[in-house]
Image (cartoon, rainbow, N blue to C red; front, side, top):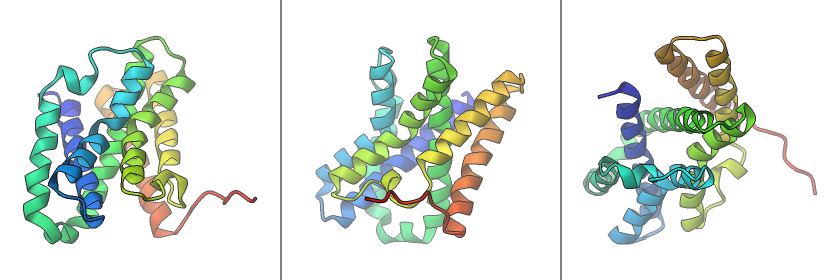
Length: 201
């Protein structure tokens, strides 16, 4: 199994968990939480594929993705509050997930002939749209519109990834560097309370 594919599945699993956990905190039932988890995990990739007119849409062409998301439902249900003890671990996997989705989105867009700027946008969309949809469904202000640096980390990672392509870095090394950059930016921004300037009315 290709390492990027395996890590993509892990990212999908963790994204689904993040959606289910947030839905649980808003008192949704199991079905509602499952829907939120599903949308969180596949939302970004679906929008990206639709914008790129890429068919079949990734999760529709590979049954493994829906199965991984379904597995996240009982896992989250039975683990319950125990997951709070692994919040830092989930944060790391979530960040790895957005890094991988950024890379996958960029690679797909570049393979279809898009320019680097638009490819970077497709990478960001892959990474953040699922989380935006999750927050909207749970009546939360989406994370990327608040103080935490999230989408910005994806865009910076997209720039680093493209630079690696231009420098002909080995594929796995480029994946590693891009993922490390996004993890570092998110982690440091949270630790030091960094944020973009607020818009003045």
